[in-house]
Image (cartoon, rainbow, N blue to C red; front, side, top):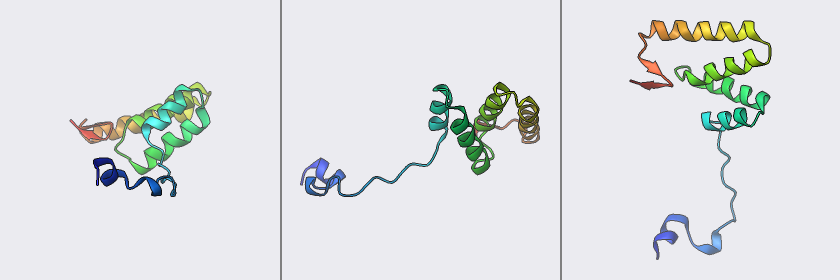
Length: 99
């Protein structure tokens, strides 16, 4: 039994099952954002921000999209909330990782 057979299984079973779909992650959202697909990117950022409250980049980029789509009041409020959380945590977190 070869290395690839051990890792991926025999060739005769290849392609018989579909790969599990990946959930939206930050890099997927950022890719959407950079391609100009703002609505799906905003939804992805908001979902990430809800699921991972300590992950600061997602709400920041969501606010950037909101500000760019003339939703500046909500964008400013989200940035204020992000700033409040950052101050209350003593600035220990950035992007969900301890410094």
